[in-house]
Image (cartoon, rainbow, N blue to C red; front, side, top):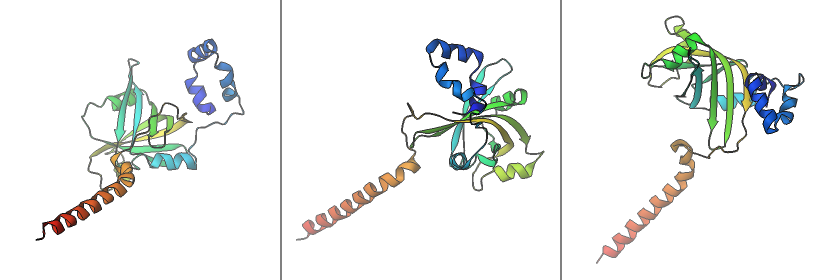
Length: 208
């Protein structure tokens, strides 16, 4: 846990609950000036981010309501620009523009990046800047992964304010079809061999 995360997440109300529940003392060290800041992308975070094919994103409306949605794309569509910045091409969807509208009024954004097979989770807090494709077509094109059939409308450029790796407790282990393939391949090959062998035996038995 890093100090940048604690400074954002541990509000007075949160600290009061921690005091009541008896956990405040164990978190006090993360509030100390010498605690690791945790607001920059290192090698571990870089490799994790560029391997994601989706993430959960939360924004806040003018009325104070949070809005969470899943943003997906080809692996690597969430790009690391530098140690303080990530960005992605915002593709045309159902044209409700809830997240876009929220960010136009309040640039604060929170992301949760999941790695279900390895039960890992990275949380990111930042400030988002919306860049329309007509204002910077080169940037949007750079973020549009080649070969992905979707129409980008803008770039979302996020300046990171805090990062936090979450405890794996309670994260279910799940696999996509792509992640299952190396496990299934030997079984599929064995089934194919057995079928071929079975067909050969049936052919022999059918001979007069």
